[in-house]
Image (tube, rainbow over all chains, first blue to last red; front, top):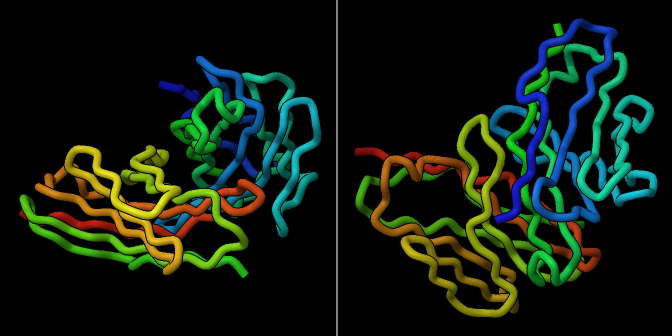
Length: 120
Length: 109
């Protein structure tokens, strides 16, 4: 099956610093990658959608200058949390979707294992 | 607006059967997913329905009625490891996944 990796799995950083999270599709080409954040006991909140080689589309209320997304290749997308604050502490999850028909006709998203970010 | 409703929490007994319901109102419909998410982990795919009817996969089954905007996930022979959150998500007309808030299922011995 399709595998998506995320690195790091856990990160603790100080306020004001930047953190980069990598999301890789290991055995398929991900034309579209999604970045979510999830607060405890809450559902997934879509932050942005990125297509390889183009700018990410951010959801309403998500600051694009704070959450920088780069989808430079068909297997790698990165999320950089700039000038992190304690309220940015959350569980960040990426998912990847392959070409329609390549990963089935039902646009399934394959999720990475998530990154637990703690900002002190 | 787009809306997906599912119960916040359910409790069931080991070995029993539980049905988790999901109702939706979305702009377009291209299928409905059920995902399982254990605490602190990412969601994992359980099922996909795009046509009306029941899809069975081992102990888990998923049902869809498009005319009623309704789906359910049926879990049989419950095991303790089934304790998790179950997320209902609908693929809308833009092929974006719209997520429900999830149902936390607690299994008791």
